Length: 279
Image (cartoon, rainbow, N blue to C red; front, side, top):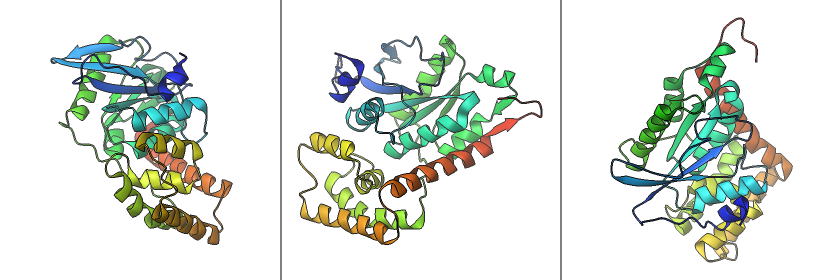
């Protein structure tokens, strides 16, 4: 079974039902990092954990096989928490992906890798400020550090145990997209409850994401679209956007642009360069 097929089928076995699942996703552009030799299973404070390395991806919006597989596992695979590994040198690029993940789940920890490499390039990351901006734990690491890996797992455990509540900020889209979301979200929330983020799910349905819709139908064991009220609200939201001149690629591009702008704003608050910095 290849990696992508494995995660598409969500075939992750627990030794015990009390085992906790941590999904780990690393951008394909991140080099050697703390997760490179991470154990698949480990125990901490009498709790067993299973670390699931998802296919490398840097976007859930490109509709790649790797991105869809990672997204589907985070949505439907029963992960108790997600670790997103970002490269300190290219934090703004990877922050875009971290924000996409936060739209799906608040149960996340950001691992900022290659801190020493960034320092050599005169890049300073204020990880405390980054944690405040994202309202999730942030752990700064270098490659292959057992002590730092333990710290990362301890921070992740606080999220899983709900000892640390996470309240990540919602991505704010342009007014027509926000209005379209508000048209559909109440119907989505009534249909799926707390199984998924209803705001994000509504946006994916509005954005014609057929791969996600198919995975959602499989997860719910039903077809949402023939639902008269659901179809009517999707049509209403899409028609509203079309009347505003936002449809097809324009809708997708506007969504992506808003995420990029938010990533830029966060990094402007958290990343500092010396005068001699060269990236």
